[in-house]
Image 1: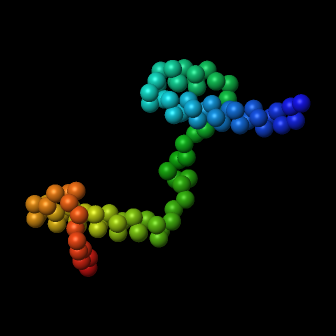
Image 2: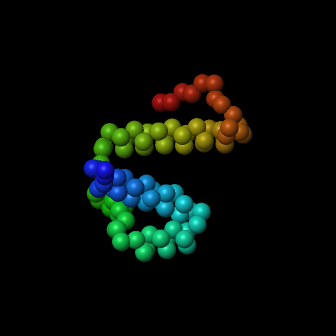
Image 3: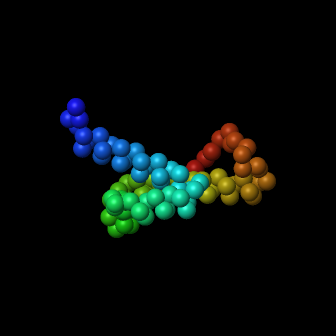
Length: 92
């Protein structure tokens, strides 16, 4: 009757842990109590050193941040509202 019993339990555990994580900002004391009394170990966040680095993506993000900074600077200097769209953008 329960051929995939372990698989079902594993899926249920993932669903419940995700639900606890989603509710934690709303009811932190309850979710902490539930997760601290759990027999299973909750997954750990990866360390900064363990996160893979992609130089090209980092360069694109830095370039995007520079562009946003320049747009904000331009709008501030010319008293243009930040939510007002620009028609033309020249970036050198």
